[in-house]
Amino acid sequence: MKRVFEALESTMNKSSIIDFRNYLKNFSSITKWIIVSDYCINDKDKPNDVMTFVIIPYVVDIFDFQEYIKKIAKSDLKHSNQIDDRFISLYKSGIFFSISFMLTRDNLIKNLVDKEVIFRTLKVQKEMLESWIVNTPNNANHYKDIIKKLNKIEQEVKRKTFNLSLFKDIVTVTFFTSYIVHLLYKEANIEIVTWFSDRDKMTSAYDGIANDFYVIQTHCLCVEKFGDDYKQFTIGYGGENKENSLFYDELNRIADYICGGIADHNIENNQVSADKFCKIAEEILADNKNMLLLRIKKDGIDRVELKSTK
Image (cartoon, rainbow, N blue to C red):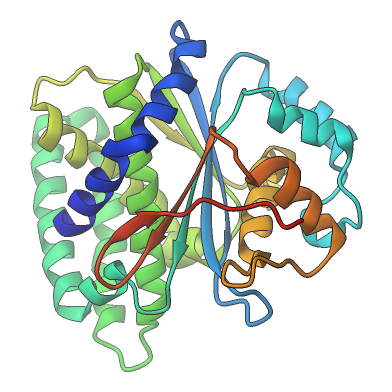
């Protein structure tokens, strides 16, 4: 994924990083952060495949925040006919920074991941986990469990029925999450960052290996870029509770509305399919300095500026 990382850095280190730094200036004392994410992939009724990540500083109790969102966004975007003005105001408050990735059908990541690459990656990850077992014996059982998952995946990859497309999506979403955490670490003073993902096949497949990939990739990316002595911070992720539900469903609506709005936005003719998407386009997406939209193409990555649909 080195080529993808370099392409991301090349795109980010222009106007995008300036916008991100300007946002972070407002939260310079905050050390706890949340990332919520939502996805619209392979929807034939939408012009764009999108993965959206929203960065949120921990300035309000998460459960109080969820209760407020429940009042102003009672359901996901696809089940909503109208957008509450209070939800629009929340986006305009400047508390969020969103990074969305629009994936073209023949994109850079999909072209880099094949079965041979997967086998090599799994081998490297297992070797690394074996060394962690020795160096961090207190977590040995956890690392052994991850190795078991990787062994199962290795067997799955050998099958003719292996879903390569789904696995590419898992690699993609976990890499993007790791990159954003790396970006936060580079630009802010963080002690804890927690990823809350929307429920999706990408994050539930193969015994939830996406969460393990995320932790491993984040560690490797930070060590590679900042050295072995980089300041340790806690990497967390949300999961299902005993009732098989996500306790942070309401929180994910912040990413859901942005992701759905971008997925519906036909950039070529600058049109959307319904009034609710028009409101999102006009009042959240257009000319928003706290929102990045990066298009992942076959030959690279560029930033897309969404225009007013009026």
